[in-house]
Length: 132
Image 1 (cartoon, rainbow, N blue to C red):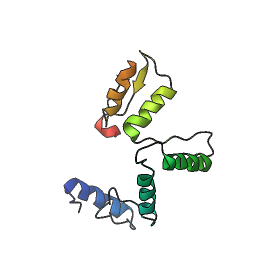
Image 2: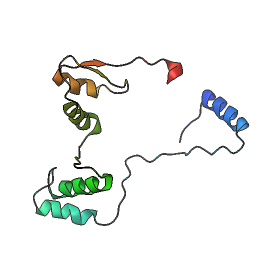
Image 3: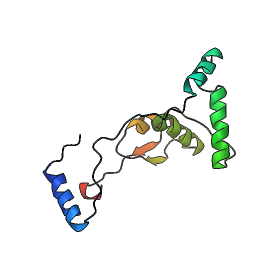
């Protein structure tokens, strides 16, 4: 459960007095909860039977095709990690060259390590507290 402090209580009081119908905050936000549809174990068994439990198998090809059709693109690719693999793919597609300047958000340094392979100048902008 989220424990309010004096600052959040002050903001909540100000908001509640200005807006009479203020929605209550949720007590708990579920994290990493998957959607079970009932066919998961059968698909896992098919992958095991085919000896293909990593990427670039039948199910990856199916996901590519579903994504391609749904979004109307000529090609769709899956990645295992947004932070590293998708950004690396984007860097390759953008043809980032040594000396190119790349601005990344300050909340993660993983892209900085990933972009070092192409000798790009990685910049992290400074953000002042009032502009967050």
